[in-house]
Length: 78
Image (cartoon, rainbow, N blue to C red; front, side):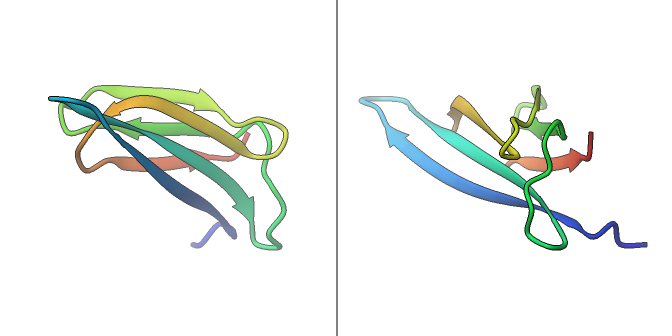
C-alpha cells in the first residue's frame, strides 16, 4: 500500500584536497506537495553507519560531511 508521501533529495558534493565529502538535503512532502514536519529521516552510508534526524517545520533536514558513496534514505512521517 502506498502511503501518499515522498522524500525529495538534493545532493551537494564538495570536493576536498585528498578526500571528498558532501551534504545531503532531504525534503519530505505529502501527496499534495505539502511539507511533512517532524518526519524521522534515516540515512545509511556505504560503511553501514546510520544517521537519523527529524525534519524541520518545512519538512527538510541537511546532513553534512558525508563521505562519497551510495546511500539508502527513507523517512517515516512524524
